[in-house]
Amino acid sequence: MSPEQGNTDEDGFKEARYESRHVHQVYDKIATHFSATRYKPWPIVEKFLNSLPLGAVGLDMGCGNGKYLNINPNIFILGSDRCGRLVEIAQQHAASQDVVNADIMDPPYRPSTFDFALSIAVIHHLSTARRRIEAIASILGLLKPGGEGKALVYVWALEQRTSRRGWDENSNQDVLVPWVLGKQFKESQPAETDSFPQKTANDEPILRFYHLYKKGELESDVKSAGGKIIAAGYEKDNWWAVFDRA
Amino acid sequence: MKLLTANFLSCAVKACKSSPLSFPLHFKDAELASKSVPYNPILLSNLLPRLDWPALVTSSSELGFTLPQQKPEITPFTPTSSEDGDAVMSGAGEEDEKTLRMLHKVLMETEVVEGKMVCGSCGFEYGIHQTVANFLLPSHLV
Image (tube, rainbow over all chains, first blue to last red; front, top):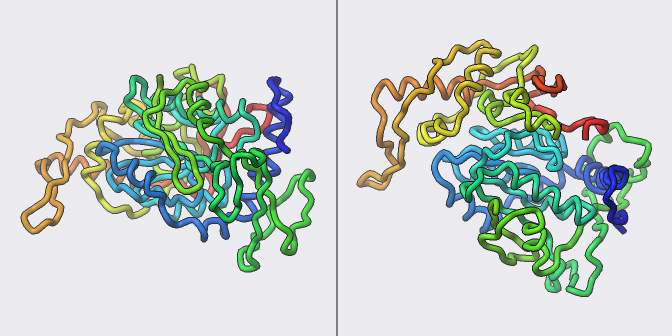
């Protein structure tokens, strides 16, 4: 379902195009509705943010509506999202924090500078293992070296038999998941590229790409990217890992 | 976008990362606004050691603020609890307090509403529109 894994620049271009259609353009359409359904912080993320030293400076890469920006008032978080509409929403939540429009694959930040980085429910939207590992490597490169900077990453799990999705370890890992827009959340249509015809006018589901992580896969990707796992686990249909630069 | 944020940004183009010219990005045609933000000396005083001061002096002067050439030395504040359980601040004499108030105004409350940030290495201009800085690269630069 995702593009075949490739190694050339041309493959990278195809993969980016695929994500543009099945991730970026989707969030542009569903931003307001999505934001209205995302308000409860996940306990492990909250605990991570509250464990940081006073004055810590870090990143929330793929911050969505910015629900993690105000958990700890004594740190500075620079949030970013690929979706411009979500950046606008997140900025409204961020008094002492800030949010910019950026892509995790091309982060506009000083290398080796940050005390921490979050990437919650983002990496699973990248369509090949090569790009997922590249994204984790890009996060690692922004952290302070020598174990001073640490990252927390969350991805959707394949093993979620008890969720309403019902996937288990034998399901396909690369899936398109429909998002049905409530009528009140229809976005005014932004200018579209010709690759994505405007046929979502009614209640036709909008499809988002996910790579569902299986047990051990996130840790393995972190190691491939040059990271060292500090802690990892499973929380409510998701795999998470805290890691630093090896 | 806050003035503070400029201290943590550099050019998104991979080839620029190794160039010292890619940080800080340089403000151009900036329109500013002042946005009220709750004053938090605990955050500010502990953030101070993490700032690249020469870069901050440059960014500030591009936006019309003059900061001292040397980073102010301020004892970091720590939250402590008073007897009735309210958080109180420790640290800070009058002089530190004055400096932190000034930094709060410049770093936290100064918003760039419209304008550009230019990379000193490749010359690419990143737009800031309605307070949102856009670092998405056109496909030929990815």
